[in-house]
Image (cartoon, rainbow, N blue to C red; front, side, top):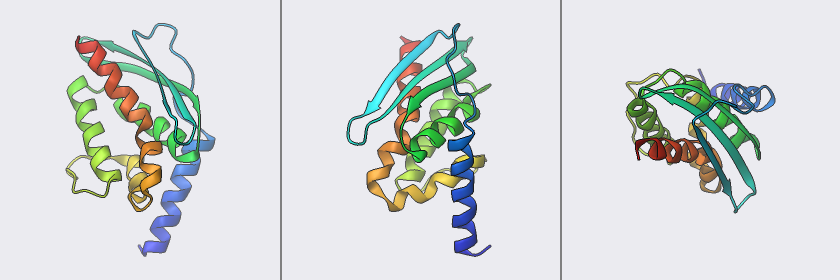
Length: 145
């Protein structure tokens, strides 16, 4: 697939997650609640997760921001549900490396998340893409305490 076709496909995936977000809402029974914002651009996220016996059993988000931050939150919640805490944290590390344009462990199928790898070309957008992931890491850190 040509680079232009791949870029167009990635844009469609990002816009689909932005316009039709997965896991949008609030978990009334979530045992972790994290609020974060990106003061640089005004993106904000309210993430609720339920972690039981070391497994992320559910995750939802609310917030507002650019298409990159909201699509990333949608993709992230979809990716971590059903994963153990260690795997969720590893995925966050891989995602962070990917959007910074660094080498990352590509043995793991990242699914739709790969659509955000082009963010590395726009350094100002990296914080947008990683906001939800940083919220997830913060929440999982609280769970360990």
